[in-house]
Structures are given as structure tokens and as C-alpha cells.
Image (cartoon, rainbow, N blue to C red; front, side, top):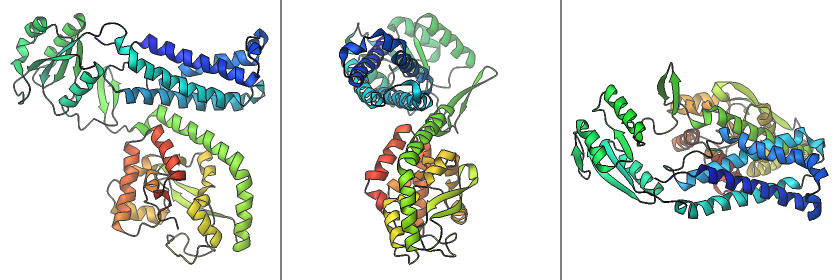
Length: 459
């Protein structure tokens, strides 16, 4: 059978990691000979080298089993795991750098290192994709199926692709085998069939065998080096956002566990929020805040900031910060802005078109009230209105609200006066919750800056 060659993957990544480190050191030191100066590695760069390597492997548990088995998955999933670990390493290293900034590490080391690292990591995996299947002999996978379920054809295709199509379908066992599948017997005939056909894999998608019979078959497969995989019959119910838990020795599947709610993903999202918002506050808001505050006050008397209570994570209220884009008015907390709204100032119109009015919300992100990406927080009155009208609306409160979100980059921003606007925003917010990934957040951030739909209804 085709194995994952875990050790080869580890070695390739280690080579990429350390080549990137030494190459970046050469760039920083501007002298190849100095790289081998033992005194350097006894001091700052020896510590740096140890951190680089230890951090790569310490983040693996948060990066979804980077060196797990890839026999039954796609190359896209493997690359996604590599990129996730890369981002975890980047964020972790950034935090360590600011904690130990007096160590003497030169800042230009980091961009050089991470640019080289991502190139070498991806290059290494593409090389492995090309040559790894040919390292050693790939045996034909003989598999049989017990029963049938709707998802079986997709499972078979995934297995076939992973084994370079070197698979042989022996047949199916059970009473209700559909047309297109070859019935070769009943459950009581399974052991002779396994022996006669040198079966390597058993796919169980049935309820025809009792618990004792399944346990006996599982033990038989284990003793004879046969993979035994169970496909749940209610696979559509648990196909997304499931979590396996063990209660007193018994496995329990939780079907309400979205990826965004899992501890490692919450940690990743929060770490990114802290680092990103810190950079924005220090390097952008430090000069943008006084500049915009001055322009706002020149055009319209009153405070530069507009602070409003909004609904956040688990329906908790928080004070959301924005640059004031309107003249002072009594309807600010009860009426949404509309096109050609007379309350909006010229500076305010510019800030709204460019999203600059949202910039103070990076303080909300840093404090933990909001995230960079998530469903937009609504005023209390609007949240109640949409909650009463829209099915599943409450689900958007299972994560922190964001400065930008999936609904906004798809054109659903601004007033929610029509049924289509309300449904569109709710539908996109719920979709984001159920399909969250770190790379989806990065995509949304990119589209917020460069996407055309983001500016629709920006008034």
C-alpha cells in the first residue's frame, strides 16, 4: 500500500527551515564567512536558530497534524496544513521577537527568512507530490464494501486518487446493494471472501451486523494488517463541524462544533488579531488618528469619535468605536445611514467610501471585543429587528463581530431596508461561521482592500 512517508516529509521541511535560516543569516550579516563564526551562534543567533526549529514543531498540534497520514486526502489539504503551520510559526515568532527585542536580532532577518521559508516549503511539497509516490513500490489496494451509503462513491474516488488509481474493487456484501455495485455475499460470508481475495481495506457502511460481529471483524482486520474504516450512515448530518469526544470510554460525536469554535482555531484567530491590530495601532493609527480628528472637528463641531453600544459575541453588548462621519444628530442610534444622507459630512463621506471611519475598531480588536474578520456588529435596535425576522440569525453571535466580513466583501453592507438585503447579509454571515478557516480570513482582508464589491453601498 501507499504510505505517507512521514519521515521524508519531516526531513524536507527541516531542510527548508534551516536552509532559509542560514541563507537569511548571510543576507543579514552581509558576509558569508561570518555565518560560520562560532561566537555568533553561541550568542544571539544560536538562540534564534533553536527557537526557529523548536517553534516549527511546537505549533504542529495547533496546525492540524501536519505530518499525519495523507493517503486518504487531497494534495490541496496537505498544502493547506503546511500554510497553516507556516502562519502559526510567523505569528509565534513575531510575538517572541517583541518580547525579546533587545537580543540584537536584526529586523531584516525576518522578512528574508519567511519569504525564503514559504518558497522552500511549497517547493519541497510539490517535489514530493511528483516523486514521493515512486519512492518504493506502490501495491494495488484490494478493497471490499459492506453495505452502502450515499457518500460511498466520493469515498471510493478519494481512495482511488490517493493510490494513483491502483485500486481493485472486490465487491459488496449485504442485502440492499444498489445497481452498479457487485454483490458477492452476505455478512456471514465475509471471512472466506477476505481470505480468497487478499483484501487490504474494508469499508463498512451498514447496519446489518451486530456490535459483537463488528468488534470481531475489527479485531480480525487488525491481526491481519487490514485497514478497517467505518462510514457513518447519517454522514450528511455530521459531514461538517464534527468533533469526536470520549465519555467514559465511549466515543460521542458532537455535531454542533464549528471549526471556528475549536480551541486551537480560537487561539490562532486571537493571536492574529492581536498582532495585526497592534501593528495598525502603532504604525497607522498613531498618525492617522490626529489627522482625521482634526479634519472632522474643522468641518463639524463635536467629538472626533462616535461611540455606540452594539451587540457582540454571545449577545453581549460592547462600545464600538468609529470616527464620526455625521453631524451631531438625535437619530444616530435609531436610523441607519442612507444614500445621499444629509447628516453625512464631506469628510465623513470620504471616510465611509474608504472604510477609514472603521479604523478605531482596531482598538476594539486589541481589547478583545471584536475580531479583524467576522459578522459586522449591529446597533442594538437593528440586531433585535433582524433577529426577529431572519432564521438562524442568532448563529452569527457564536463568534466575535469583525471590522470586515464575508457579507461586506460580497456587497451586503450599508442599509438593510429590503428583505433581500437582510437575507443576503444573514446568509453570508452564517456561511462564514460554518466554513471558517484562517485562509478565508486572509482572503476577506484582501478583498476588503482590493475587492470591487466591498465598496458597493459604501455611503
